[in-house]
Image (cartoon, rainbow, N blue to C red; front, side):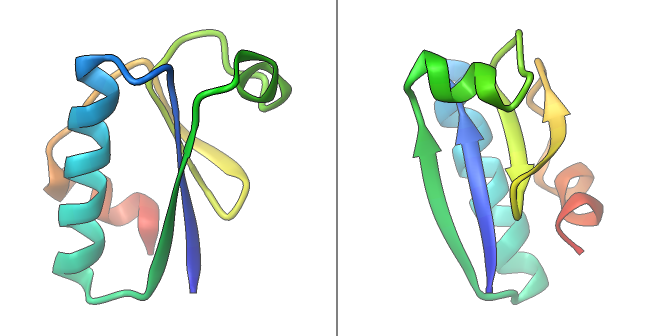
Length: 77
């Protein structure tokens, strides 16, 4: 099971990244746990200075943008 973490404060872009990430994971048919990380200290511990960001199994894969689900799929594989 993959651990997908959305790093952000809950802004509209963060919500859109959450939706697109879920759509990508479902399209791939992978088992996943989606965690929203909203604590700024925790976000900064990832070395992320811009949100939203996506971490897969603790590794930051995407920062500061909201790509389409099809563009997120390769990051989850």
